[in-house]
Amino acid sequence: MPPKRKQPPPETTYGPTTPITIAESDRQEYGQLPTLLRKRFGLPKDARPFQVDGVICQLLGYDTVIHAGTGSGKTLVAAGVYALDKARQRLTVLVSPLISLQEDMMSTFNNKYGIPAIAINSIMDGQNLSTAIRVRDWNL
Image (cartoon, rainbow, N blue to C red; front, side):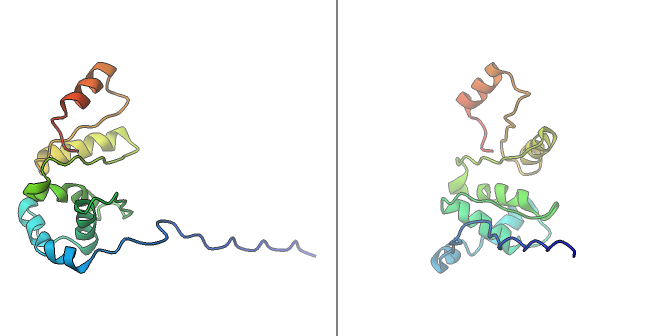
């Protein structure tokens, strides 16, 4: 007699149990955001809905996690906040597991989007790290 098959594990839900809902009044307040992002960053078309929602969530003060495929536009979500003048002094922490990706992202924010960015990782010595944090002449 063959061994019994194991029952599949119960379904697991990842993420918040109560997803964040963006109020209609907030959507109206930031209604021009897709066009603003396109113009500010030279995009060929308006931002995707998940990008706009990610930017709005940050503007509303929510910690925001975006899970999307490579090349789908996650970088715009981090940069998008800085399209608004009132958000230019904000600080965004973007977590990346690879130093090479951190360096690439830092270059993209600095050169493509014009947003001061720094990569804080094990390559920096203690003195440079302390100076970078104390001076804080970067947003990302």
